[in-house]
Image 1 (cartoon, one colour):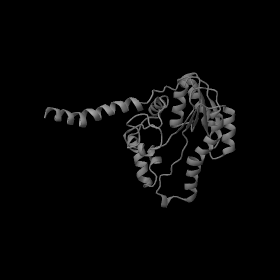
Image 2 (cartoon, helix red, strand yellow):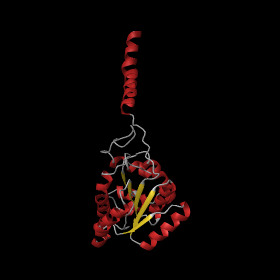
Image 3 (cartoon, rainbow, N blue to C red):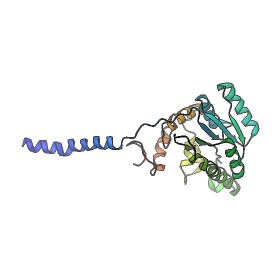
Image 4 (spheres, rainbow, N blue to C red):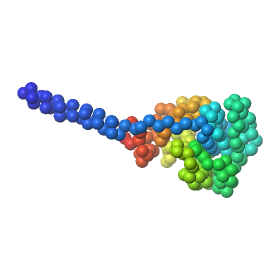
Length: 243
């Protein structure tokens, strides 16, 4: 009888536990540390808000920083603010992300990029039926085509870099940008809940990016929304994404 109890204990407790331990060591992600110092970080929407905070953070960590936005005046103000705070000179490029040729000229002039941070975006706080077609087109042109324009312009040189460290492309989005098909008024409420300062967003974002994290959430709501959009990305632990 004792042998039977031991067999059941082994079969239903010890064996699954042993298998979990073996699987843990087989699939355990290797730690990744991607430095920012002396690497080229190119940030869109970098003249204000989160983009400017990201630029401040990258410069403070010794990165070579380039920022792109539409307004040259705001870019100059951002450059002066970063220089005053960090002593680092950043490169500025005035271009509309909807204009591929302008974007391509800026990227070529900036030189090969190690980290492309796509932070630009617009949002019209109206339900779809109340939006004008021109507003919908403008949103799609900036948020979608603007992103594709930057990636297409930067990717060839990023792939041909001599740097042995990996190149990265990071897309910044609100929670509203993850919840397509829902009421836009509700989306705005979700994205503005539990607000964080731009500096805090920049700090946490770079912390994750330097560890090679494939998706980043910055608060509880994003934690709940992000995994369902990341099922096809490589996972770095048992707790990433696919369940």
